[in-house]
Image (tube, rainbow, N blue to C red):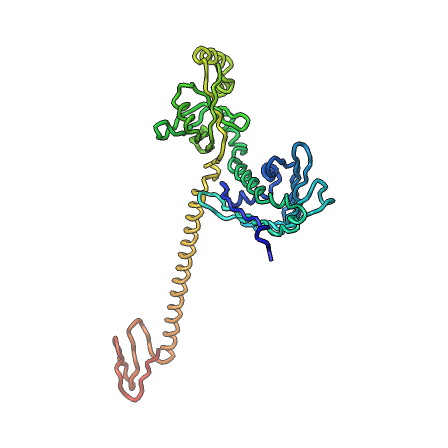
Length: 382
């Protein structure tokens, strides 16, 4: 019987589609960004993506190798489920003790294009018997790791080459925030992308400085110059500090499209105006890059298009079946008519629409409706 105390169960909503979350568990580059609890870092990730293939993660802490996970991929159902034979190993790797367990991770669609992730880690008895301190931290370790996964996937689009192009070269963004009166604002701002942060500078007396000091959550969009066919949407949290003089980030952001002479003149002008500036550093918490010209569209729109396509396909198939059924019905009626006429000719009758001619005792009785009966023999034919 399984000891329920030795089973870890975790449910978490991840801000990415099931397909993307599934891939994050198998992509070594992505695994290196999140598959490490606490202060550990991933030094190497290896994945042989097939049932029976290996899955290995090696960790370090403060420069020391501390072991990791040496596992086997037991089951792969793309976009839905991964089952691991999960092995805990120390610094010696497989040369030291290995404590095997079973890890099952499932992925289901959640509202808003997100994923409901369910993780069940069981058969931890051997680990608990040999290393109870490690077993006691398995649940907390997965909480930390899955939280890192959510963070990585939330902003993964920032690394898309065309999103990086917008961040590096566009001079303006639109920033939304909540004003001091509680009402929304959207304003154009110059910005600089630096070290994974969006930096906006302003005067300490500006309305947005006061508003963001009270409510630091913001949203930004950065559009391409071709009618917003390409756009980057970002949500984040702002931190503000006051800088004496002019921040270098403000000059870099403001002179992106200026010549050298224009930039020098601009710098001289602003230094004569500002004695201090507020530097707003926005940490992205969520990002999506869309390219409407290439079909990279919001999840709800993609689902709508796919649903409409499925309905149209079903209608076409239904219409085609009706045509086939009508054609077969018409063919059947024609064949039945041919048989009736052939039989009528064989019986000495002529069938023409509703007109029936019947041979009665040597006479021909014609007309519509019931035939005239008489004589010693009546043959109605068909």
